Length: 191
Length: 191
DNA sequence: AGCGTGATGTTACCGAGTAACATCACTTCT
DNA sequence: AGAAGTGATGTTACTCGGTAACATCACGCT
Image 1: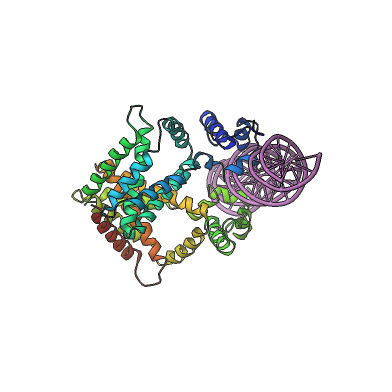
Image 2 (image 1 turned 30 degrees about the vertical axis):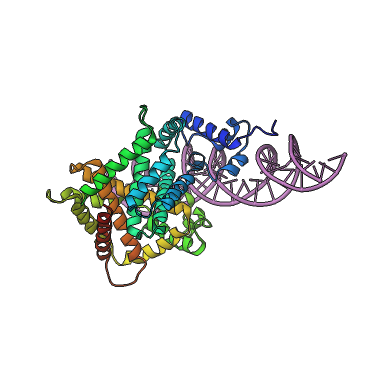
């Protein structure tokens, strides 16, 4: 038996999502979250998360890392968009059906808080930046890399949105491919 | 003579920019800003700006409105990208050389604060959203409108960045056209 | 048994942001 | 002229996010 209940971090996240869903983000206090997470305190919360918002977004940096890895290993012959497509598959395939439920709750909570939307936009920009950086490392010019990365980020967030808005049996990979395809044709219409 | 020195709002902005530049954003207190703005108080500051960050971004909603107006009045025959180009010209032409200096200082301050970068990203997203909305009103499909709007926002922010990084005699309109052109060719390379 | 260690708690503090009420200087109406 | 109204400001007091310094406690290791 452990000295403390293990997984404090995970319990904090669960407690936060619950409370945010029940009362809203702003009406919920960090002390409340810590308390519900098994009698913890504010201090412990901030040891795990840099601020109150971050409890909902922590661990998202890994998305950028996953896509960057796939991009680094993509065949030399792949075009920028093909490379991004591979990376999207790699990232999306790491999402299980369980995370779909979490995603649903998260989406609802974020939709009700401007503060959380701001952080969400910031994370989205970080993902796009990570993709662009990885593409540039392959020698792709800055602007092309930026635009390809933007399409990738849009595809992922758009697909995630659809995935968490529906209840069918399609996987996130399915949605990402669909969304990415639509974006590519939209981009070609633009010319 | 007025009962109070007029233009409290403007004085607050100036004081904030000064102090942020001298001490950094986080080391500066709202009380300090209000005090330097002519003996005002915290309360007055928050009557003018919804939060501490907003003092640097307030009034930026008008950018979206300007572009939306131009888009609404653009000729029926214009393609999405042509429409965005017109709107970019309209917005950029409202920037005088005086605002270039302000922009320089702003850029330096924002570059040193994650919190301000987050807000900046949020404003950028708002601009992009406003453009997209205006395009959709013209019957342009959602994804195409989104992408055209994204290109527009990128062109504006990229051009503003270059404009405030240099000291030549070129106007923001010049930079916007250049940037938008580069983005369009990058987008075509992407196919 | 004693020691080190890492996760937690305690206390005290600062600053952002809000609310309720008071003030004050000018405007307008009578 | 005097009274009432109005809008921008100040005052006070509070909540809560976030930080720092120090104490505690339960375990593993020697």
